[in-house]
Image (cartoon, rainbow over all chains, first blue to last red):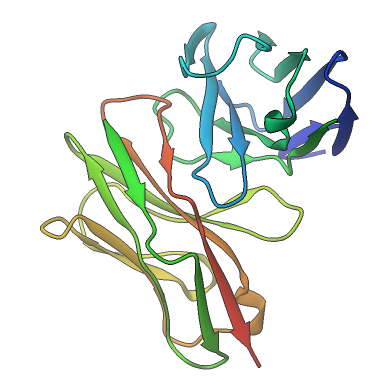
Amino acid sequence: ETGVTQTPRHLVMGMTNKKSLKCEQHLGHNAMYWYKQSAKKPLELMFVYSLEERVENNSVPSRFSPECPNSSHLFLHLHTLQPEDSALYLCASSQDREGPILFFGSGTQLSVL
Amino acid sequence: AQSVAQPEDQVNVAEGNPLTVKCTYSVSGNPYLFWYVQYPNRGLQFLLKYITGDNLVKGSYGFEAEFNKSQTSFHLKKPSALVSDSALYFCAVRRTDSWGKFQFGAGTQVVVTP
């Protein structure tokens, strides 16, 4: 399998649930990203990991918790989400922290009830 | 701070006609500029980039974009649109000295009619 793979493709959860989104890249890249895509809004950068260093958007609520156990895998742990968190969550990777091109997965469409 | 503006939510064009999708940006320092395309139920795909050098950049599927520093613009163009070009297009900027922090616009929906 090649590219950036995200699972699950769709997720419906209640506000009290705990779930995790998974991303795996098969490109040998060293930087991985989480973006939130809401309709008619700019993509929102949530977290970036590169070689164990993390950059985060300070406006992201603590109910979103990233984990990057190695350069190929990235998780987004979700707990006590709100309905306004419903969105498409996109994972991306780049060759390294300077790499100018992002490679995106197909996303996880999250619905919070 | 950096920002990207795509002034049009939607662009409608007939097949065979020229297509232009507008993008202006604001960034302190030197920018990297990008265009990405998103087809339904898919992630974003890279189309082209401006890093340095020639202001006219050619990319995938016959698209090109022109970097205009004085107008801080990076408009996407295609001389003859195809129905298959119908998709959501995103402009993005990143400072050359700011790793990881890509700033995307809100996207422009392109609709090409036969």
